[in-house]
Length: 226
Image 1: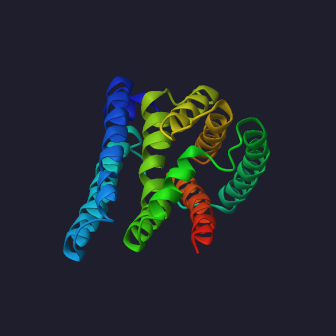
Image 2: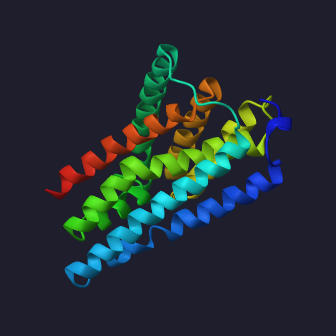
């Protein structure tokens, strides 16, 4: 895909990326209120929370279409096999870095996962809403932002490794890392997703990969709560 086909240049793509990151943080604010107030009030906050994610995804998809104006393509067997290998790589590196993180910083999980687990323990509604968005919504908007818009919109199509590295770094920055090892875990994950996206050219490949990764992580968190 040549830059000429894009509806806007890299500067505008960076601005949209920054805006989407800001919005993504704002739409999560209702989580602070889901465990308080009457049943009706908590229901309203839940609706606002889900509506915020839906609107952000819609906006992100519109921006992504400007940076990647090509037809949606189905995943092939080769794409799925690459996704399987990428997930195996992510799990292996996470296990190794998790051990290092525990030895050096005495953290059994990243600060980001600890914060999510803490929110889940605040009430059933919060747990359900956070679980749903962590598996079904966050992977969509994060892949649109950090892979689709960043990789396709902010860099020329002929660049390969630089957008992968920048995507990994940007992905890690927004995930609340409190030490270098934790930071590296998310940078590696984001970079791997970016690699898969560059190889397949299909955003759904990393959305599925990201969503499955979050599903396993959320499932593990739920097991520790009960």
